[in-house]
Image (cartoon, rainbow, N blue to C red):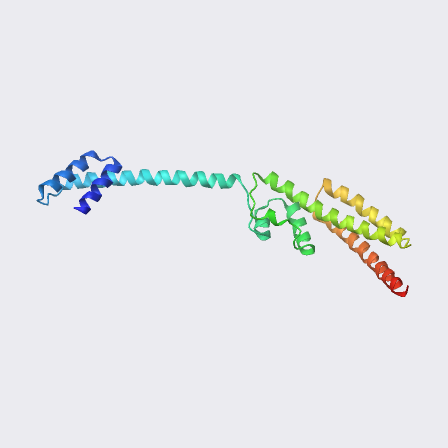
Length: 207
């Protein structure tokens, strides 16, 4: 009886009214009435059709989900980001910066969702410019400190001004070659400043 009740509910859910009647007649008779081969074939056909309809509904559902995913962009980690970007200039710059500043991309960047590739590229450009400007401002701060200590640093100051002009050019056209030139200049300035900073430390100890 439980099995018959199950099938009755199943057919009712699918809207098979005639099948419901046949099941009830089979149940009431208690004689183990069976369907004819033709009727069984018809039920199987209708079940298959119902299955196909459900399958199509599922396909449409997941298709919509996939389309929504395609409209947005997200990245699990740096390697995943590089694999999804089509902008060679940006990817080249990112790889160089990753080697020098391993954590230069903000933590919120990975795992977030972006509406378009344009939004991704714009945010990446902001992150790239930000890390370079921070480094430049740090060099300026260090130079200002040394000048207050009486160090002239005329040639080094000129080099730092050259970094500033290179940064402006880089902002308008971000590419690996310009970045490497800027990083090379900043490294040179930083090494010179470090030499003078050590001298100042020694002078302070003597006093």
